[in-house]
Image (tube, one colour):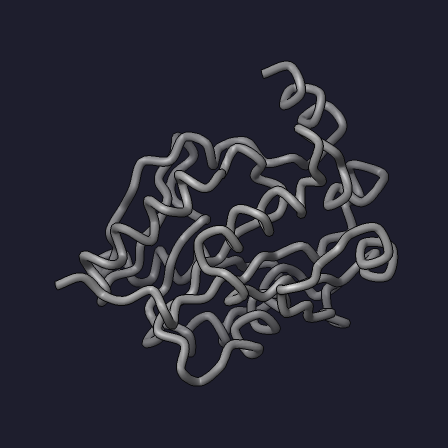
Length: 197
């Protein structure tokens, strides 16, 4: 018997200032959608309205440019503290009934519906384990955490992302090869590389 997805949520991290890019990378257009719109659309196709988008820097311009109807938008006023504050904001916005959460970034455009579905499928068969992406640089997000690990995510501080929890509980991981997660968009050069693929 597989676990139900009815109480699985997603937290999409999109609070960064895009300092190296020079403009909000959340709004970069690729394949007729913004990078943030890309991940929101894929998540909604699988989890319907069970998603939280965490904004921070540029939150007003992002909300003015995008239709984020159907997702729970949280503005992390502490985004300057680092990614941990956005993870805490996203986990804190989940209902008490949430059974698991997928943590995704807005700047991994090659993560599509199929990759998110793979995470969900693996969790359904092993609902007590964390499902983590594995690629050449190691392991990381996107990753799916059962509810029992939420308290550990809530303890993250500074610029320590979800990988810190993955490393701490490596014996509880179920790993999925996900080379698509290697590309994240931090600079104009990264974006040009993406457009040439």
